[in-house]
Image 1 (cartoon, rainbow, N blue to C red):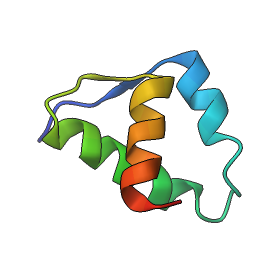
Image 2: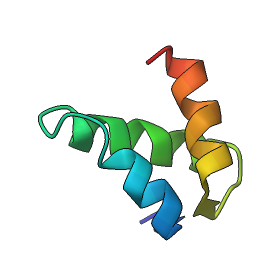
Image 3: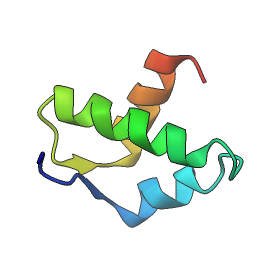
Image 4: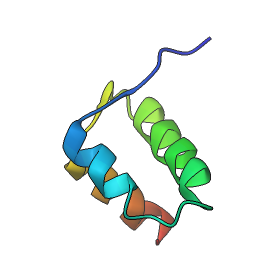
Length: 56
């Protein structure tokens, strides 16, 4: 099993701005993006990078 990615409170707050019905999918995509980049903690910066990558 892969190591769980940590979210900063600020990044969690940004995630809550996403409509609840797409939030689980968005969280998965962002966590996968972080893991593929070797990132252990999702910050607002990482969140924004992932959002830009996925064009959402």
